[in-house]
Amino acid sequence: MYGSKAPQGTHYYCRGCGEKLPSDCHAQFHPECLKADKRRRTHEKRRLEQERLLACGSAMQQVPKRRRREASPLTPGSPSVRRAA
Ligand SMILES: [Zn+2]
Image (cartoon, rainbow, N blue to C red):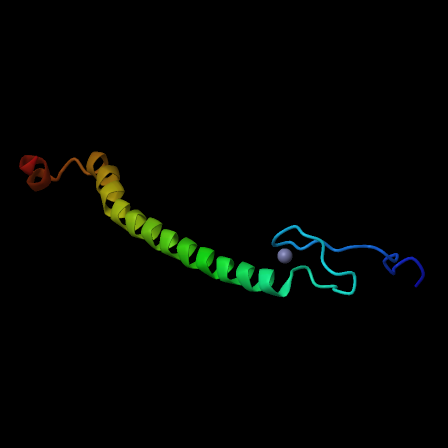
């Protein structure tokens, strides 16, 4: 189809460093920028995973606490727990 082809002289810009890519290069990154980006993303992914794990751990710690707080007013007949406080 006409018009779908990019006009001559159109430059693509590297998404990694923002520099112009060679006109015959239809990639979105310089090879080395792609590599660096990949590495960075892997690094970020690992970091996010670790953060999620930490958040998950703190959330798991919060579950019994919240449940206890919710349960105490609903169950007035729990003298053993109340006496300990
Ligand atoms: Zn680049």
